[in-house]
Image (tube, rainbow, N blue to C red; front, side, top):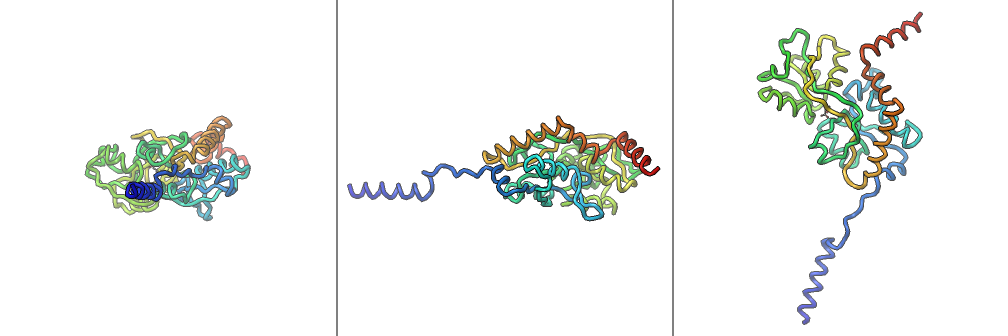
Length: 277
Ligand code: GLU
């Protein structure tokens, strides 16, 4: 009898010690946490003009930066209530999931693999994978890159797609876009492949490079949050904010500002000329 009681007691102690009796610990609500802190912490890129970049006056700018400010404006009634942290494609998910940042607004494409580890908002911008080459290059399509050295940024959809569309390409991977573009300028490879938006930022500043006309994917940029119940209300809020921004024209205005079409550019230059007169 005593033996049975002792055994029962021991088993109960083990049960308590391993925490089997406890309900899974609930994470505090992320949106409530952010509101209590008084500002958002957003992971953004510093080297992907025109989405997130540092200009010649050392000012952080771009579409994603403005979007983060507008979201802070909707949450706090003050667009200044946001702190930016630099992220790269290879480390952004770990910075999000370790809690270093609340959101990633970082030219990040929604993919099924990423959806396993983060929660995405609705898409806010659509891009396509493109190829950048020096003017006069013999490369015309992605298939031409088979057997050729091609630059990608590690951890991007561009890297993955290149391996799919041109499996024989000799892939040169860099951690940042600046390093990748520098390698292209130094002729270490025949081409650089990533989102058309990011390549257009380089093409604007370096007209000796062109972007080939074909697009190989259609990808949606979205805002990433941690997965789980703790971000349920945050995700709901962010999606409502994006809906509002679609309705009130904020997203279109951001596109005209940061990724102007040829007609946007003409209107802008007319306005500038009028001011000069
Ligand atoms: N949009 C692509 C991606 O999410 C390339 C740009 C980037 O890595 O930020 O992989």
